[in-house]
Image 1 (spheres, rainbow, N blue to C red):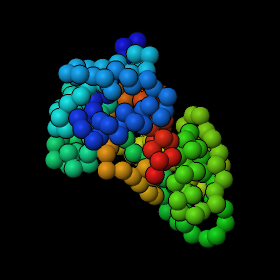
Image 2 (cartoon, rainbow, N blue to C red):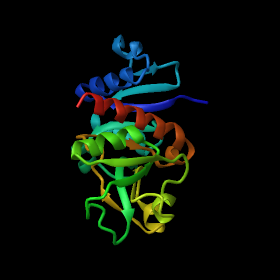
Image 3 (cartoon, rainbow, N blue to C red):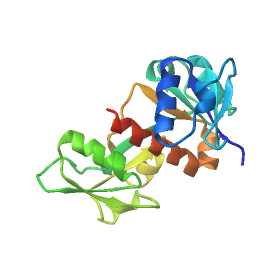
Image 4 (tube, one colour):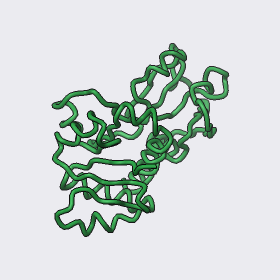
Length: 205
């Protein structure tokens, strides 16, 4: 399979993202010693980094020559939207007040580390249930009070009677954007990479 290609904005975002990838266990020597090269392999070649200017990162992702990109929120607001902006969100059943009452809340998620870090930051005691498949089922079946998941457009949530309670579970000025076709074809790889990066980011906050 061809490498997952990620476009990075040159400069601080490049440095920060490469730092996260290294902490997640990827060998980024080629990027550290890049010279004038702009397309570089990391890890065992399963990921390829493309270095570009901020607005071009969006162009490359929108046109499918890169699967993902890391870009500032300001650049996203300024330049087009025909891509997915990946967010970790807290969602629950429509009409339910998640924060009401004092009882311990149960959260279903594929991402227990990200979830734990988010609620620790709020000083809340929660019970986490790890779900491998469709986490949207958990609150519908009464297994959990809410879910934490990666959301793209939120359409799957709406179709299942769920609403986003908070979309800043992993709020950062830099955003991970994804080509729409890539997210359908390589969803598992992309979500796994996003999860690893977010776990490492929370460790250094």
